[in-house]
Image 1: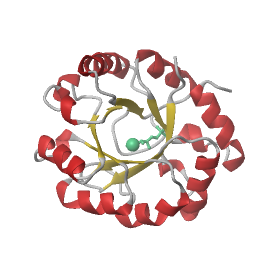
Image 2 (image 1 turned 90 degrees about the vertical axis):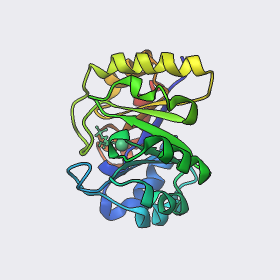
Image 3 (image 1 turned 90 degrees about the horizontal axis):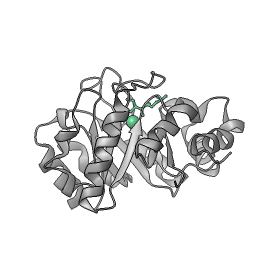
Image 4 (image 1 turned 60 degrees about the vertical axis):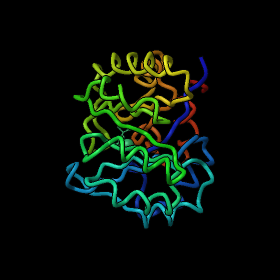
Length: 220
Ligand code: DX5
Ligand code: ZN
């Protein structure tokens, strides 16, 4: 099995030195840069907006994997696309019309992802799967880094993997929340090919990032 791609969540970075942190994880072997955007409304935390994405863009040529936890979504898509997002992932619950939102992301020339909260079933994808580039299975409830992996989501990863394989399209299956060396392996075995990791990437500071990412990939 190929090593998973690792998309470190900069939510666990030092926000006072974000540009340096993005350069450090890029140099340490991050495949994508995961940006968690929270609005204090759709989720109980507030993080960053398109201005910060734009400011970080020159610090890495790796894909910016932008996870929007905001409601409404549609009025902000253009700003995140212009700021330099490559992949824009949205939650169906944020509404109002997920299919329209996914189409709008692709019309902006970006890759579209749909996120499934722990309580959201895989069948939510039934009428979306042919229109998207990525499925994000949330293995914690969105809002905060450092939460424990919800094991029941492994079954959902397996189910989504089957749905993706049936399409024959190159759709990524990403997992977000509570990823460490143990759960990373479980998610890969269940069919994930991209893993978000905040705490597990940034623990120990910059001198540890390369070893942390290699351990998550299982290539250490
Ligand atoms: C949660 C975010 C995650 C989270 C991951 O809402 O989407 O990206 O920060 O953090 P860890 O890896 O610390 O669970
Ligand atoms: Zn995320």
